[in-house]
Length: 258
Image (cartoon, rainbow, N blue to C red; front, side, top):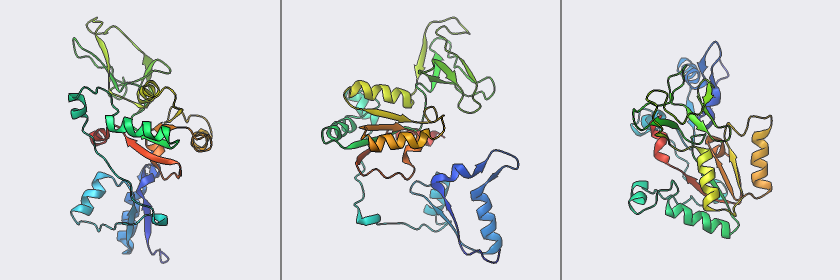
């Protein structure tokens, strides 16, 4: 340990440092222990720190270091927050705000690319009976099953359990079975309906099951100048696309539900 000087953990990819095999460990916690034991600094680097780390920095429990300038002296992007409740009140029932729709349309006309981020895969995030309130849940994890339209199945995103879709409630026999919530599949379908002439590509765990498919999707988006990339957190991890001039975070407040 005599050669240790500084330990740096990239929080952007912290999930890849969490081992689910024995012995289980979290690299960030191990780094904290090593630094405390050897009296050396620990740097947690991230453009999007987790809430716990951000709170500790805000409350001065740890020191907050900011990068106020971007590489190559690039300008910081303009950020617009749109309240979808107000959109709904004005008659817009879509998950895409009017402002985002207009900016995507502008990008399409200018031949620029767009990335849309929604950290929920699948089509609908849960299915519920409107009469008795029954919700389809995983038999192993007891969490809501997600509807995947491509395979017409209900899936658990934790253990991988799958089951058939039902249109009649197994508890009360009602036909008032409704699909709620939004995932990347549903977002992709809505974008295709909204912009039928735009080319789209989706990147989430469901589309990167084959070897090298992650790189292939990103390469296709960049090299074939596909108009819109839709995906989960995979699409926001340090990529460089010079022609991307617009990024939309869809239903951003859902990230606080975790």
